[in-house]
Image (cartoon, rainbow, N blue to C red; front, side):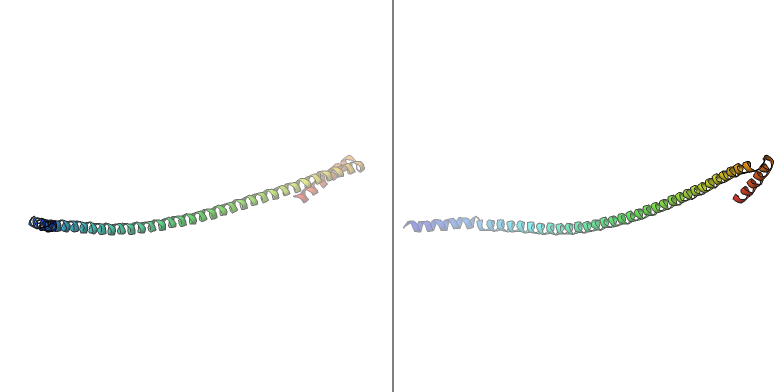
Length: 159
């Protein structure tokens, strides 16, 4: 008997011991439990992926809502700014119009005062010139009466 035969016998005995000890069943159970464990992990991973997709969709929806809200706020702020600018512009125009009207009134009053002052000076000069001319030509009594009548006529014309 040669070594090949004894190697064959040892292999048969080894395989008999392996089957007697139910090693293939144990290995099968181990592989089955490992397959179940992997299957459970895959199912858990699928469930987590679906949850993550739902969360992502929710966050994207919330982001879109926040962007819309932000755009609405910006638009509202722009409208309010435009209203404030228009109001400020109107108030400025009203202020300028009031100041212009007041300045025109002051100018008109100054013109009237200047005209009245010129008239008053002209009257004073005319009266003084008349008095000087009359004093040189007329005696005191006639001059006083003439001066008084001229002064009354001049006052009635100016008023």
